[in-house]
Image 1 (cartoon, rainbow, N blue to C red):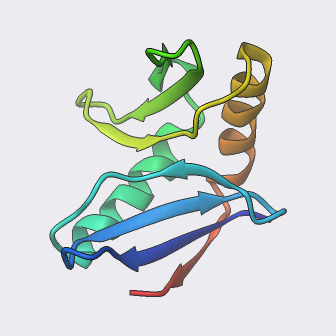
Image 2 (image 1 turned 60 degrees about the horizontal axis):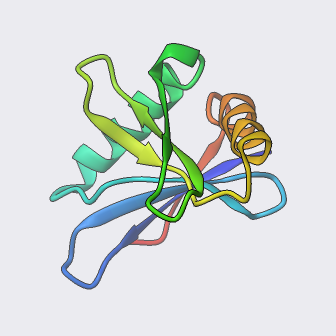
Length: 109
């Protein structure tokens, strides 16, 4: 079972990570000024994670594939790690789709 973990960064802003059942981070958020905005970001991930069209598959300058999950308004709500290959990235997307809808929330802020 996946979980969202909320934390505060060094600048006092809120961020969340979506972790798979094995504890690996599969999606990281942007920074939010308020905790309620962060909570809204989590809900947006839950809602948008099931739509394959919301995943923006990218390639980093070094050739590593990664993805961004976008909200309905086109704003990025989460980014993946860099993957070793395209199939690993697709597995990451599958993991977000599987874990996000029912993930618990742990507030470490």
